[in-house]
Image (cartoon, rainbow, N blue to C red; front, side):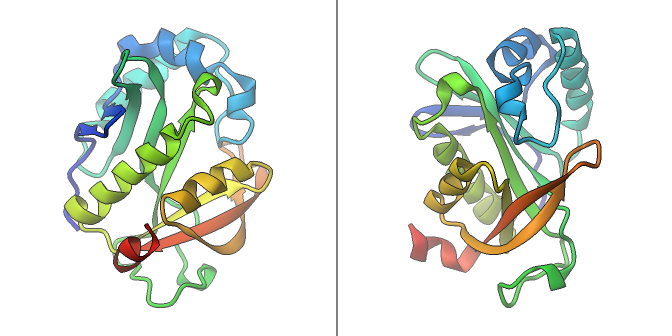
Length: 198
């Protein structure tokens, strides 16, 4: 694999690029401060835009690392900041956790995560963004496979994964940032299977 960091990506409707501290108010208003959005995420809703600003200031430093992937999702038509999408090393790093045969764990088990504000749900934006970072991971970074997971109580996220090519692999227990366990469904997509599923 050749880590490239959070390089800008374009899709027909979206622009994916690093976020800046100056985006704090829009991010807080559009999703970070929304309890309904945070409900199924690993992080709690932000209390105010200062909390969002501090997080984004920390992210600005992390963008210097080639293995840090975290894009802001903007709608190209009007520039609206709709959410985020990125890659992290997943909780399930043990091969024994996965059912799919032949997974290469030498570079770790990476998974995408995404979040959109409620005003942007149900319009295909999450699937479009996920497909874009999926192709970037396989074609540019050179990853062999990707996991993905969602809270059992959030089946809409699973539908996004399936539309982008992922298939259910196993039931799992994930954890929120404070350690709270959360019943999840884990999915898998290998690079060589991508074209067969689209």
